[in-house]
Length: 379
Image (cartoon, rainbow, N blue to C red):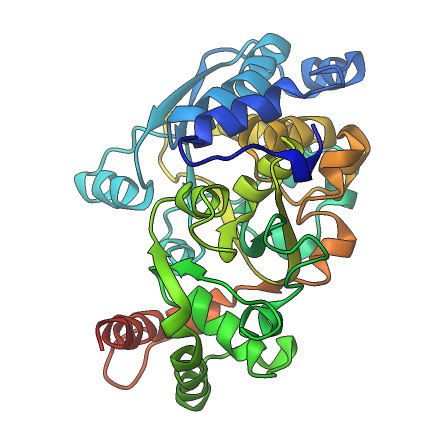
């Protein structure tokens, strides 16, 4: 179907599950090659189980199919997944109780420093990793006691039907109401995303975004004042931004990259750009005191092999950092991902170190920024 011939979507509902299932169905390479099986059987074979955190729903379905089940088939180690909205509160509660029931947790960068400093994680055994995993994964993604498991981003997307000759290419264009007229959308919270976009729109170079000083925040909120009257929806749910575009309630919006990638591959009438995208990692960490630490090390090594990393990407919609996975992915998918070097060069990586730093009043910079954002939204 031609994108310009895409039908009216006023009644179409697009769920994360449907998009991710479609992405998974598009897999065109063997799920696990003989070489990967042979390597895993030789280096990672074992017995028993490993308990790994998961967010449930389509995410868990995809990880089971493309990572956990192949891992079990190759190594003999069963993966027990436990689901929750967020891992960090559960891990902290288990630590207070003196009993760690999980082996692996996925941790947001904002929570990593505190959990790292209090000894909640064990060092990653990189000696188990294959050389291609080490070569393909940049050093900044391989911490002593955590490794990036996926990269998430907010990007700019627009409705092609509104701009058949080409729409906004960056956040400067997003703010240009005259050249690209029409209603806009932005995420409701947290405010850090939109503050970054506003600074880019106001001419701040990507290298100068961090840290978000008071002066930069003032500048960002002044810029946000300009666009606020044109925001018809501050979206909250992950799928809401895409639905706004499909329903033609707005012509351009910020959106999570996984949603945008799946929509483009489904031939929906949207385009998106990586220029000025806000990129944030999620870390996989092995919990100190967990019941199956040795098996957890093996699962971490397995999921960072290039072919399994490609499976993770296809199963979840969000890539890990191993660039060698691009050789294992369909070209039309690899070209759209943040792990693609051309796209990665246009992104702005979150500086969580500056966000979690404490101010004189004891608040973190992140808390202070969010307070200012909420006050601005309410004003």
